[in-house]
Length: 244
Image 1: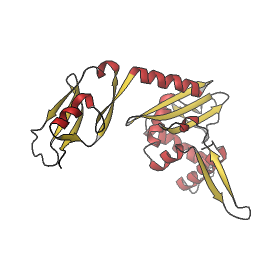
Image 2: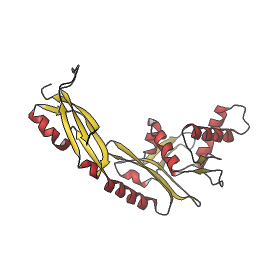
Image 3: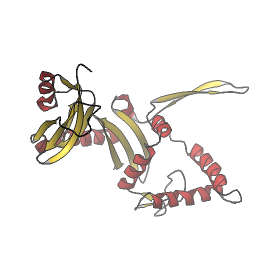
Image 4: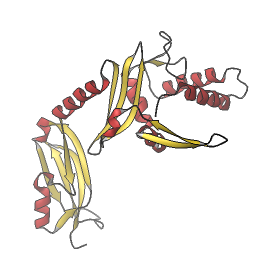
């Protein structure tokens, strides 16, 4: 939702007090924990001096890689994932001036169905910044932009470059699976799950598949289809009898 430095400071104050009830500087205590958290999670080029991202010389820095790592960790939490993926939110305020307030996310990419987050930012030193997250099949891609003059234009250039360089091959249910689906149907077999695998355009031309039915202790499926690029296996999908 909209960046709220006041809310961030309030949360930091509450968090700092929870960490140390005797601290005379709960916000500072929270910032200490931010730096400790960064160290624990491998943020190699980050340092924090405040909870809101205000410029503070070399004391407040974060690299693009570290932002991508932090975003990946955030997206492991279902609640935070839902928050950063909301285009707008309405909440009710009680009391004598009861009212509803609408918040609108500044992330313009959320209008596209395959985008799920994550965060925009701006100040004079950093210029336009953006952590964007979108899906390609069942692959999650995170883009980090720093120092941009046109973050959404730059994002479009990056996504086009990614799509030009890589192919997302869907195999399994609802796909041709490079001809496997038709061959299975002739045998009375079918896929019931689907996977999407990212590969280079060159690798896509080398995909082969093999049906294996002679499986030890096979009780729950009729076999598996193994997909390979050259000699490397990249997917193994069970198949089932159509009659079951």
